[in-house]
Image 1 (cartoon, helix red, strand yellow):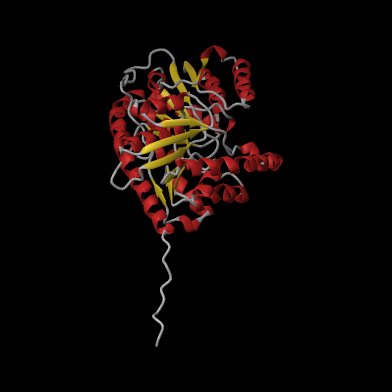
Image 2 (image 1 turned 90 degrees about the vertical axis):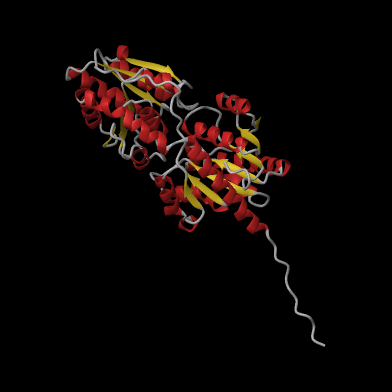
Length: 400
């Protein structure tokens, strides 16, 4: 990042401490800030793998309670809890912002609304959007987008995310810019199998949640087996706290479908490369819109073919990639057909994986991300400086 223009004291806030897509982007953003010479304090709601990673990188990481917007809080039944949490959080957020005296407050994701709104009075504000909630109602979308008005710059992880924001807040067009996610190539790439001997190894990496469509994979597996294609499925990921019921449903479904012995529930793994090395094809079957598809890019970099649901952010992630295909969302038949096509066209797919990886590496380099994000943060500082300028009134000399 260009240290000559980047603010040198930065307060960065993020709503989790795990190592999923937005967590990894946040970590890379912090590394770029630190490399530029900035002093960075990070606030997280709890300790976890992300906090350990950031401390090792040299960031000053603190843990504090913070209001994180979850879907349950956005429903009418959750409004009393939301108001109570917001009231208790107001004083804490004001205190943290005042104590840090940061030149720039970097807010990661729109689910931390108070930070953008309250930091604007004292600091430059950069809001990094990873979400594109087009399926929500108009009122909910506008409410979620409202804190973006307080940001000097809004960083969007895809054109789709930017477009979704501007549908609600068209006046923010000059402050919103697209900075593609950094997706580092794995340090070691295990080439795809030259021949598919034995089972087709299907993989899913990410949150286990209904919106991610994980159950579609379980329902597609019997169709493959009935057609004579031996197949196995690895599920790498865990549920949000409170969604344990969904994992139980997945396990029960695997048993009812007679495929329990073909499905492995591997839990969360921070080592993406080894998880991708163990599979032949990755599937991202999201039911709802995704701002982007980091894991799809990671699979391409690992030289694995990818099948994604035809959601705008996911289509953008695989645009131009010869070893990736988008299918109709929430369609088990389309998913099974695409998986069978992977097995049928395996030799041709393998021949294209190296070129696909090269394309993704160029598009999502960490160097390019640091440069683009650094320019956006510098612009936030300059815009804030203009906000804080107070021009003294001029007076004409009194006539004699």
